[in-house]
Image (cartoon, rainbow, N blue to C red; front, side, top):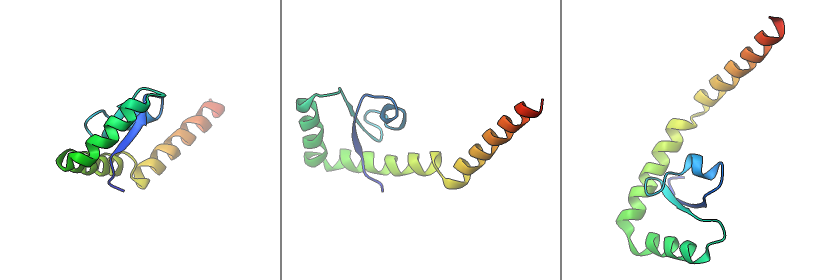
Length: 85
């Protein structure tokens, strides 16, 4: 959607979001840092726009449907080949 994300530093989130590139990563259960990150995205529109643009670009490139389906098909082929070997 072209929106920057504020995520906690846990598996999954920290694999998609790069700090200061397409979002902000904060420590788990850190309300103060969450507030600061939200505030920064409101008071610094250039920063928010930079993160927003990069967010869309990264997701489109990394998770384009055709690419995902091709990778899934390759995985299935790999699994079926291992059963027939």
